[in-house]
Image (cartoon, rainbow, N blue to C red; front, side, top):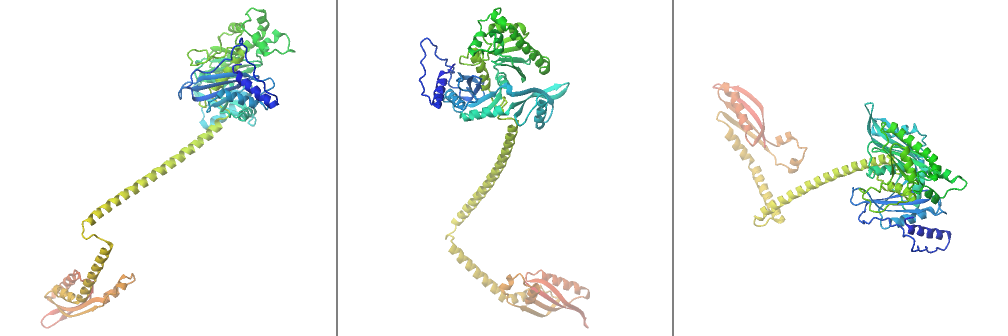
Length: 592
């Protein structure tokens, strides 16, 4: 155990729940080593903090990662591992309090932390499949049907999602490579509720193959096009994950685990082997040719045979017959040198112990666990802590939620664009109004400057007086014009009448205008003619051939006068006399 304070505080909490008086934790003797302080010496890693929580059958492991600067590679900040008390299990009502105690003390001052966990592979159905080159909207259905060909999928009991790997060519035809998977909805809901009850809501729930995939995406494991296989030999089973530079190719869980290896060594199943015994048996103390290893060699051979067949199947079906380049082991057999040597003899590919934190080029600043028990849980917790929404599948944020959020984002963009357009229009209107206001102020200034040149200063009283005087003068002019209109008409007629035309009579009608009738829109034009008109009678004396032309020219000259309007020849008659021939006429002229 690496953080005894967490376990002690949890035990005190559980004692309180049971009504027992908490006892002070015993002080370690001088001969005991102090617990390992698994904390980074660097304190400036505060960006994109992510906590990975791995809950095993009898322990809980926590790993915290972060970035020095935004966008840089994640670094491990600290880790801890604690045994679950014997009187507790994950289904206990008190387990959320145990989990809350661990997370509270582990995270400490760090508040904005994304918390991730993972479901076990036994709750996962996964296949790497090839589908036709379809439109993005049709990929989910194609992925679901492709997964249903391999597994029985119940939409009520499982959550479906998929991960797009990339485009590929099959016999010269473009297709899409995807990983389709489904997780147990009950297990996902249980984990989500567990952390919510503990007061630390989850950011994401992934699966163990994707947690191991995170080591590739973050370059903690260097992988090329050749697939690799990571084998986790746990207590009761072994989990096999086949990965490449494109992601997860295949995952498989087999029932042969560490317990199966030591069954023959212990000789009976009636007396279960304790964890400490398994660790001791599968240790570096067992020699390759020792009797202990010879007793587990048959079980180890069966396990390795399944690994080899899984590798061959993955290579032929998912990696274009590219052989598996490496087998990476971690779990209960980590410290069993004899088992690793035997695996190297049986498996043609390279055999390594999976230690992503042993690479000196990776900026891990703290000491990682060396014991098999701790490594078996810290490695998955570290993979979970490397999760990011950008590259890690999340059962709490599947493609359905992504599509909904994309629609909302599109709607928000449209609303923002409309609001921006309205804002631009408002700014343009405001700018126009300000320009008009500026012009009005300029004109007002010009007028005020002009008014300032006049003396006396123009006021409303002065304007009223000036208008009254102007109106009085106008009325006087109108009165004079009306009074002497008859003289003006006689003078105008006399000046326009030529010598060949003689006016015999002049009759006029002058009725004083009524201003109200003048303003009325219903005044009749003919009525105005009768009220203001002049009738002249005359004789045209000239050559017979010029009578009509002379009269016509006379009428035109009268029409050009500003005093007369329409002219109507009411009567004309040629009269012969002894000496000559004359043209008598009568003309009615409108007075303007």
